[in-house]
Length: 272
Picture 1: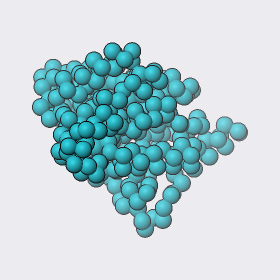
Picture 2: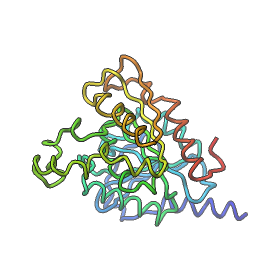
Picture 3: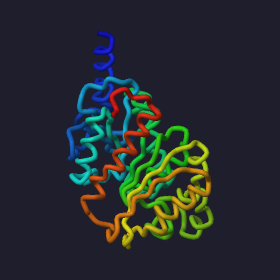
Picture 4: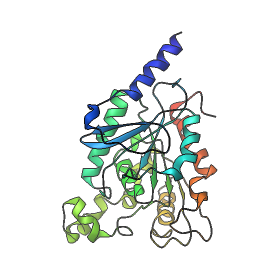
């Protein structure tokens, strides 16, 4: 009986609205979920498939949450997460490129989900493409709050994508000013905190990616992370670029990595 009550309480936390319905922008999601506002920005939660049996509720933090993302390509992996009792959530921070403004919005979502909805204090961060900058930038600031990072051809360095000049506006700086302060903001230059906290990393990244080159992003991150004593698993599909190849989104190694980190940090009973 007590377990059933806890499950109902946890589900209520997930579905509890944080803004009047009239204020919420509709958003299409690959699985059934809820949209709500955080600091005026649209956020989403896809709950576990069954009533949560665990409090706090484990979750994957997905980015980028742009108007058309997450999309249908994520359905396969999201379904496996929810079936394992894991929620998925995110907030649209726009083209923030890991800037302080974007990181502040991420912290607001974290406070909402962890402080108000009973979510785990250690999500697994998951970045697709430029979502890598968003999730990694917050993670290096909050290494004690991160269970792991998983990326699908993730951007790891501002200099690679979108480039300092294009990113500088999001940082309220000129290109020269951002260049001078790059090591204070660029995730690939700030990995030490994650390594010290023992946060495992994972990426799947094609070897002919011309938009987000492997060598300057996941490859360089693995090199630097290992030098810092960290652990990073890198899967490199040969002949694949920055595309919608199903293997990027139906990657069992990625799913296994996420489930392992959730189980490791949350002690979740219903994760295989």
